[in-house]
Image 1 (cartoon, one colour):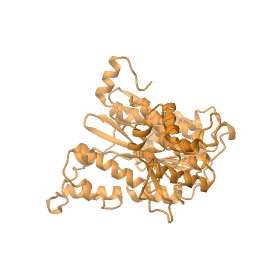
Image 2 (tube, rainbow, N blue to C red; image 1 turned 135 degrees about the horizontal axis):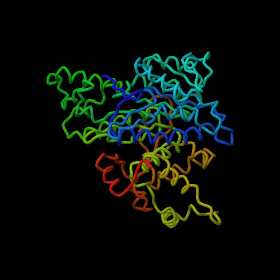
Image 3 (cartoon, helix red, strand yellow; image 1 turned 180 degrees about the vertical axis):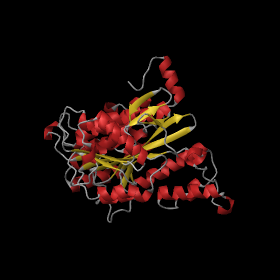
Image 4 (tube, rainbow, N blue to C red; image 1 turned 90 degrees about the vertical axis):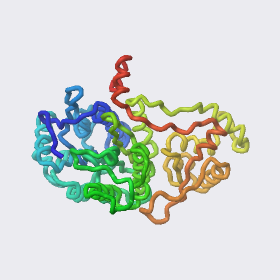
Length: 442
């Protein structure tokens, strides 16, 4: 695919796609950095890094509105250089393989952030002390370079035109996440979901066949199948995706399968859908092992896309809980709440998909004693609020038992509803909002 430029900006379409995505990341990057850097209490001294694996030029041009905006890498640079708080411990790593894009990237940085020494920023670690690393290489070579760099708490954004091969996703994850769902690393992974089933001429991508019988595939369909195997790093997806069904149904299957694949390295994986055009969909998969990480990004997404925020009457739910389980109230006085309730509420509110295990950091903080925490898990399972499920990862040996919320039990007994699904902001909705003077980008 030939990249088109308007000045130094990459020409992109989709006010409800690229622009919306960048607005969400504009809000998320500073929030993520404040938390992982230790905020004011530590004078932002924890080492942190934002790694843009497909950096572009820092600028995007939106056709529909004839405007140039900061891309995600531009917002990362703004965080580094337009900040009232000290950012000396924040590294910005911008990786771009396309030589023309990289030339525009250099020019944008020289013009917009002149305090960044571009020539020095192109030097490798440890010669480079600018806090910005500009890497012109393919993803594989960039990953090799990054493996020698101490990054600290890191956020990696994989934002290719279509997909990132699984072996490159896994190489970064394996190097960074060396024990069971260890925190300190987050991924944002882009996937253009509709293209696999509708095709896209500009990428020479044919739709996936709807049968596993290879003798019925065209040459171009075989190429698409090979690309999908590169996406997953396996052919285990074939039975589910090479099957009949509507494009929408097969896209749902793809999202579910890829979410499951990312769970190999991340306890929490939440796909955010975007619709830059009618009949076109992509997803950003937010991946983290920090319980609060998903909730933060979800709040930004829900607000920008006008989705309904997940909420329930906590007081009413607690009243039902203590009525059903008076034994948990023994030896409690005043406003104290039983640990069984506090753990259940945390899982419901903060754990994507209702997933949990004995090593979750927030539950460990709530109930530090291992034996007591184990008792609470067993109680929640015995009462039907939790059910054990097979592990979602084989990346480490001796993983703990994994549990998930049984939403039907929680809803029936406590009146806590299942979290609603997320829907994208589509172009027609954007037009309607503006008729009522609602601006989702405000």
